[in-house]
Image (spheres, rainbow, N blue to C red):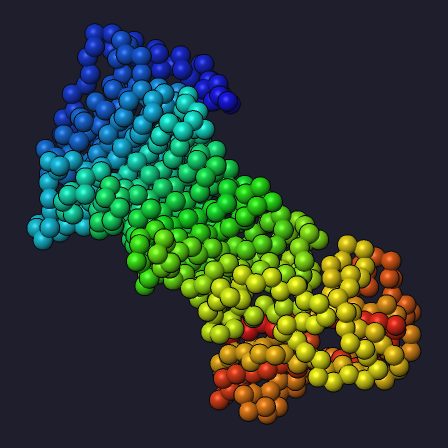
Length: 587
């Protein structure tokens, strides 16, 4: 079993000696008495007693003194406890009042030695209740505003001497929110910030109790090597006035050994801005209650799981028997993801009675980067879908595949049947013997029927056509209609391969679109000018790939469905391949 690394790596002995010198000032066991005239800042060193072997009692004394003055002053004087750079031993839980803030002066390391919560931030049952009273600012819980942990000068670093791989380990660095479901809603924990807090090797880095806990922001936090980086939980499995607008900004969440973000409570709205998710287990996000809404904006994801098993971004699971009408939502915008191989990214699991939480996906810019695409059959349909189960509704979907994914399946296939996924389709292994399930040849001249072949070194299987004369023309029609709206833009591209260009100077691509009444509504031609100096293309490797964007046009008013048709003329050589046809829509 791996042990925790040496805690003296945080700070240095000179810094620790400075604290010991300061401790000696309190040899008589005295602690300062605050009064209402102080400037609102106290130093933790003034509360450390030389006779104590840990620092949790000093932190508790400082908090209690600051809280008392805050209450005595009618919350007109709120205090910050400054903590000098060094290592501090935490042998028991420290309860911090929402009226009190902690601020680092350099790098502050907390070494947690016991199996429990290091810092617990929660209102007290005796705290005053303000509602529709004067002054007005107290009605909005202004005492919570500010930074509970302000590590902007140096930072707070949490480590533990316990091994989080042991099943009995339940270490939590910071726990926020009341543990009592009956707590008064007039004393919430809300409108707070944590800044520059780093947590390494805990069972849970941050735990949020869903009891009057909302509008919280975490900034510049680094959570690594924890079992769970973030855990939302309620004492009685229900949401109690909690979960509104929880925000994580410019954070790093790395190497989580279990789900990085576990949501075991209903009705939470969680947003991640500019946050990196690196080398976390699969899934990164897991919710087992309905009402979860997760947003990823300009984030980054690198390697999920071990690269061999599941590589899920999100697993939505229904744990309540009989639940059928719940909803979970997941939004992604402008987020690249580096994966080992193409795989499903989202999962939706039923409860024991077969009931599902409806999963709604909205993807506006997801850039997929693969390390290995050769191990996936391009015609295995389950590897081409984003999800594995029914009750999934996909809305806006803008996805960029940064490697050739080697399939003729259109991206928009996920939108068939208005976005509903059916188990009868997704669980079926569609290994295609001679034809593609989405495109059909309705006309060809001088071209034989296709076979599934692999062409080029490192290439995957594609549909290969054999040419028989110089008048080569092929017409491919899509088997399904696309739902469209007026003013949408339709973009079409495909990957074209041939082994020889000898007598032609151009290949002509033509895109035709027909409406629901089979009337031609738009035509788009693309003339691929071929170089006269290099008429023969290299067939020994993959350099004979010609990726072509046919072009785009606007959907005219009154058209609600279209069927695309691809026509290719003037192809010479002994064969050609058409692969990776993409039909995309955007506004």
